[in-house]
Length: 244
Image (cartoon, rainbow, N blue to C red; front, side):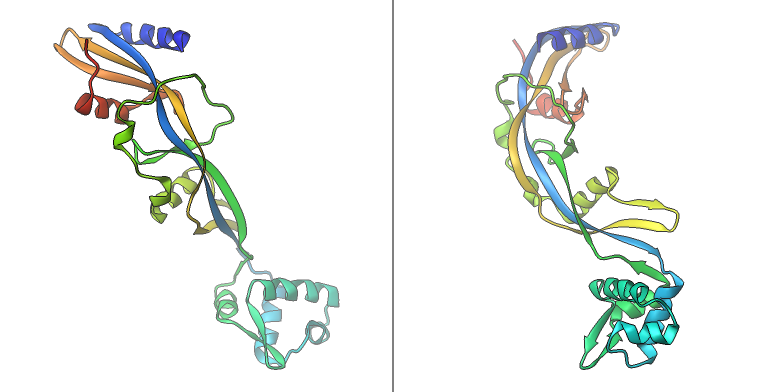
């Protein structure tokens, strides 16, 4: 922490009229959370899949080999696609023959095949003091033995209270959705975050005097985001400025 504090102090003191009055270091409480979600891949429906759906729609089809014979296509190709469509709930067996479901009708009309949902998950750091997710879990974080942030006990919200819109925005910002040519991957459902761990993230605080403007203010370096943290600075200046 000492080397980091000295580097940051040199950076601040390079600014004209800035005089550092005090410095301190402490830990920002964060939750390491896991967000489980499902994605759906959408691709342009190929001609054979369309033909199978149209055949099911018009004929009494009790098994895939009937379609293979009707379309004069290798049975293995039909069976593979037939199984995929049944797994994707595009067709279902009703009484003694298969019929298109509402999903199958919609996809046939749009010409877009929605693959079965796939499960995924991403890990993030959530801060109650910010009431937001700070970042995706990096490969390494800065560690040091530090005391807890003096205002931490005033903020008791948990990541479990984040709404779907906030979670979706976080996932989109980290590449959970993608589009490449005819393939589109979209986030379908998002589950409630699960807390994996609670940690203290080292932060360095400076109490600064600006001689030109004759005012005092706080600067806080957050080692997790690796930047000056305006939210923490505002909290400290409003509620608990450091003064001798």
